[in-house]
Image (cartoon, rainbow, N blue to C red):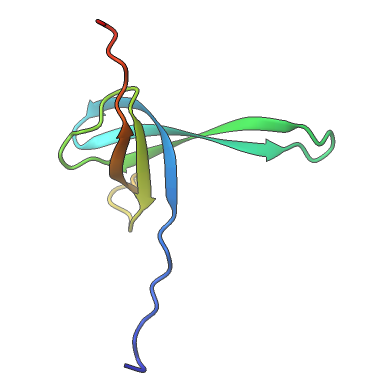
Length: 92
């Protein structure tokens, strides 16, 4: 198997679901800590990703893991891996 193609490891991110109002699509907010170049202070930066949710299992406020896939649409390049933590219900 000398001609075996090596596949790179898929990127994974953990974030909070902002919206699940679209059909089979969720919006995930991912926070990361970045050091300021001049002042050397750590700051929180937020990125928003559109992820494919085939079964519609993620709800707003859930903590989810998403992983990178080939482009699904104009903005979707991520897929829902798993729901790590369900959101606390507002009714309780």
